[in-house]
Length: 386
Image (cartoon, rainbow, N blue to C red; front, side, top):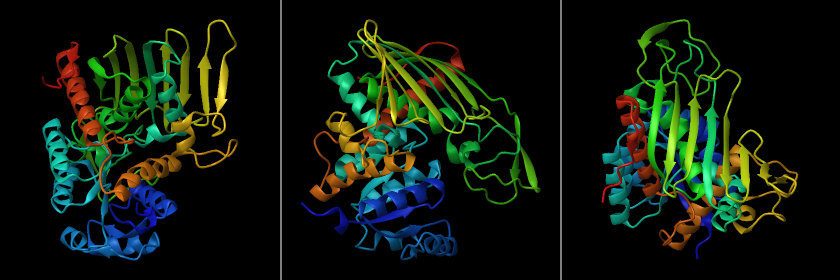
């Protein structure tokens, strides 16, 4: 098998998440040959700032570069499908940020194209790769909680709390019609299904837009920027600031989740609890090295992330000894390590150890049901076809 350090990659986009991709790839030893950005000038400037060899002026130039075997797509949501289509047509492996597409019809197309191309394809549901989430997924699969009965939690942020907060995700033409749900809710829903070993079958959703008018800066704004523009344009909002969703899962379990990007003081708070017939487990992304385990007749416990105390998947996702905190950026490294193992092997494994385009498509189908439920005010089943 080839060494990961022999594999060359390119990254499309160099904002907050694109930069995290670059750094994670470097830490793995992958050769990041450059960036593709909205303009050659911006690409050259960002490549210099990130210490990369350079950038390509066009996608044609990037795909003509034989050194590039894997392309990471971290551009705005509306660009994912046209860019991934071209990458797959060129026979390159691809890692795409979520959501995979802005419609389930398009995500289904990408699943088909990736299968026909026979290349490694992944969607960056990186939160799966906190070591304790990997540990718990195996624990649940092995019956450690008994039968899963209830899955509850939230994903709260505050970076879009104010009318003066702006990001491209607020524009449905760029981010899609579901905003808070599509952006961060998708992470929670994917994680709950993955760790709990259950699939969302039906939803009852209520979406809310609390900030009716926002003030869009006349110039560009970086994600999570704290700067406030003085020259702005008022824009009416149609996408969701928050959502509350009831869930029914494939095994008969029930669930509930609240999603918000307007919760003051919550910077990046993803929490879940899984209640089983024998035990319960809970995890908080802002305390990622702690897993709470609840019992009825013996004391509860808190498992601190420690490769020596975790099962094989949990230990494999960890890079540091116990007591040395691993965080958000480390999940990208653990995720990409699994992806690039398949790239080094020449193609996707029969059962990939990472979320694929099929997982990204399934989340799009869940989002379709959420949008329909909110629109029609009723329970809606997830339509996965025959």
